[in-house]
Amino acid sequence: MRGIYQTLVHSGAVSAGVMATALEQFGDTSELERHLVDRGLVSEWQLAEAVATHTGHRAVDISAVVIDPHTIALVPGTLSRRYRILPLEHTGDRLLLGMVDPTDIIAIDDVTSVTDLRVEPVVVAADALQRAFERYLRSDEELSDLSEQIGETNESATISFTASLDDQDADAPVVRFVNLLIAQAINDRASDIHVEPGEHQLTVRFRIDGVLHEMQRADRAIQDGIISRLKIMSSVDIAERRRPQDGRLSVHHEGRQIDLRVATLPTVWGEKIVMRILDNTGQSMAMTDLQMSAGNLARFEKAIHRPHGMVLVTGPTGSGKSTTLYTALRDVANPRVNAITVEDPVEYRIAGVNQVQVNNRAGLTFGAALRSILRSDPDIVLVGEIRDHETAVISIEASLTGHLVLSTLHTNDAPSALPRLVEIGCEPFLVATALTAVVAQRLARRLCIQCRTPVTETSELLASLGFPHDPSDPPQIYRAAGCPICSGTGYRGRIAVHEVMTIDDRLEELVVARATGTEMRQAALAAGMVSLREDGWSKVAQGLTTIEEVLRVSI
Image (cartoon, rainbow, N blue to C red; front, side, top):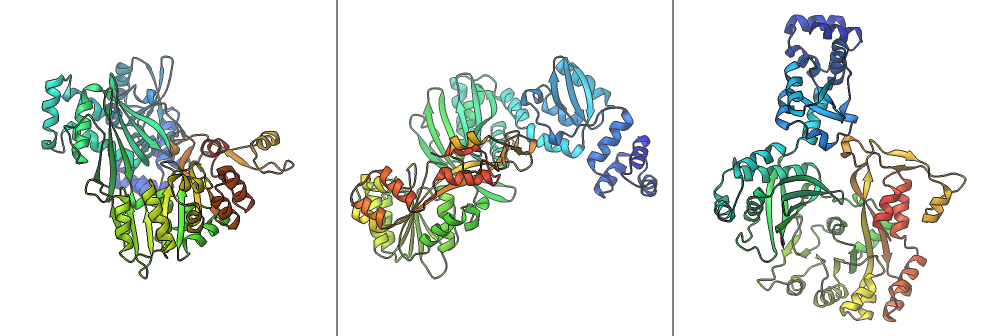
């Protein structure tokens, strides 16, 4: 290996004097390599380039390569980790194999035997390879182990196996698989885990940045064990398979406590389980984190800092309504005010805020809880969701009696909240008087800053979309490309687009007159409201998202 160190010196990566001292201390051993890297004398990539030059192979930077999962699957994960190798590309009978040591003939022979392909070794950096392992080598080994241990099941075996799950220790295959599944979802920034039974196999999907990605397929034989384990962890009735159930569980991951909200749903092939990941540590709690435009933020802050009134946040499920509400509550709550929430469920715990969990079985409904809250001398009341006439009426009455009420409502846009409240059964004049502002929002995927690619669209196309621009000076916009950092999607994270409607005299008149949603929208736009689409275009112009994403989430 001494030739490698000579190559490092000749390339200028390290001085001859430093290399001579290191050789004298560690000799021609792997410890020398670790010393050079740990001391920052050379990088893992410089070392890989030196190995490639010395051995006559090509060096490949896999940190900039998106690898097909089917190619990864050609070589068992245990083999990849043992030899520090990773299949990179499969073309015909050729397999491009990334290796830290391309002279490892035993590794090449084993891969050739397993794949029956012609192996072409290339050199990769050790640190990039480790990151690729974390990215691509998920739970394949665990799944194989699990399938082998459970094997083919029949009805009686399933019942016996299910009943004993709660007695299994941490080394049991089902327990290991479920733990790995949850840990991987948290590491991948997933918001939901879908465990879906099928006729022949179990499918696991993660919702990442608002889009579902298939992560794993397993033999149907392990289905009952995994579902039963999740039901036990979330404290729901393991024997009940005919009706939906809701549960909750907490896990510790890398020093953090993560809550998961669990919902079961009977299907024709068994129970489907969806777990919503509630990571309180990653929750945005500053108004600037909402990423509102300056105008929208000013409107929103003015509304929530009023001593009384109702502020609604609208949007579909998973649009970030809870994040916006909690952020607003955190901004206005202080030791001088009494802030109380009523939620179903309590998703995030906030210090200094009294949070009430709805319990329908015990008779603690939204309406009952709100009545009790109003007798507890509150200044600020947060209602998790206005679902029915009773909750809506009490919330409006609370806002009219000197309380600031924050809540959510399911509507397509901000102006639709006004006729929606009337449809629920609230008196129009009370709605007009109580409501201060309505925020509608959607979540668009944020462009990956590492791989976004500039693109110039024609003025005709932009004009047809209603994108504001100067035809003589086309705006600089970007499209999604894909890289290992964003798992090849071109997006990483999400960004909110908003429309903030404040209630003025004209809108009050329209509400009392029971005007249509279209008329109210026209009045709101005339009063200066920026629509979801327009706010989305501003985010595109800033290089934060794409035209496609704005069209996907806005109307």
